[in-house]
Image 1 (tube, rainbow, N blue to C red):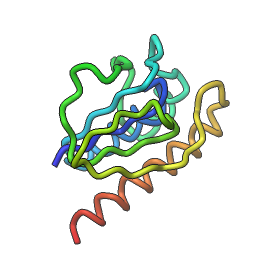
Image 2 (tube, rainbow, N blue to C red; image 1 turned 45 degrees about the horizontal axis):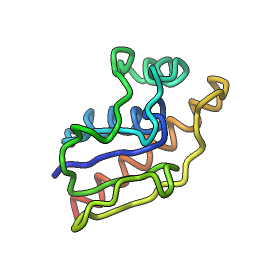
Image 3 (cartoon, one colour; image 1 turned 120 degrees about the vertical axis):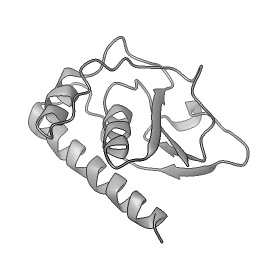
Length: 124
């Protein structure tokens, strides 16, 4: 099963979700509707605290992203791709852009919990 995490800039939320999902063995990808030029440095630092390195990741747009079985959207609204026959899940999450590290840690922990719950649900 392929899972695609989509947010606006692919610089924070979706990058963290992809990394957590991959750490749990999922075939995960991420992209953004308006990719940033680099991954959010606070997200990089927050993930480093969990021994997950996303420092070399690059924000990506929709081009070249493989077809997914499940698309998890995170605040990209109408700009998210619509792929017929694909299951969609929307996670309302704060955007870590411009937030201090303490807030990014809270967002990271919420993403981690949601990815774990998603994986547990897949196993049922």
